[in-house]
Image (cartoon, rainbow, N blue to C red; front, side, top):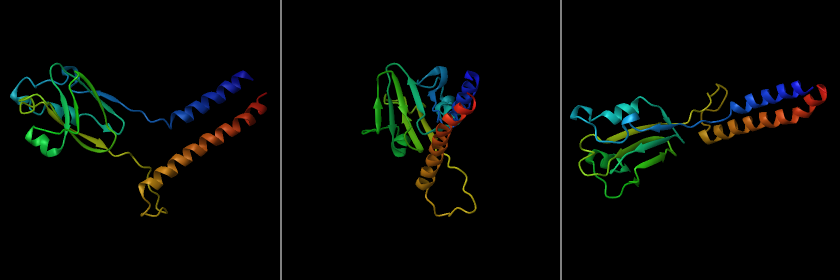
Length: 173
């Protein structure tokens, strides 16, 4: 009897696990951290690092540095390597930045001369994947309606499983 209930619980946990969304934290620059690239040939070091990773909403990037800073800036400020009013600023040596939307994010060092020497990076955060659209579905349905339907169906499945638990408990007793 207990083994059947344990088995049922394991099945329920496996269903609920499929609905969890996982987020990742990326160490900017790997072991090097957020530093001025060692040579002029490394001026694209951080963009190359970023292009090897896939970033999504709710992921974080972790900047480790000493006597420096990290700024999130506009594309124009990124190109100029200068910002008077950054979108985000930190200089505490251990900065975590969370992506809350898809799109491009532009990072530069706030220390004079560092950005010009290659301490800058562009990260592209991917759109959230939507379930495939069926042929019968109206093509004008907006993404918020699709997201709501997906959330509702996963909630309905969870509710149904919990409603059936007592029934299975009675069968296996």
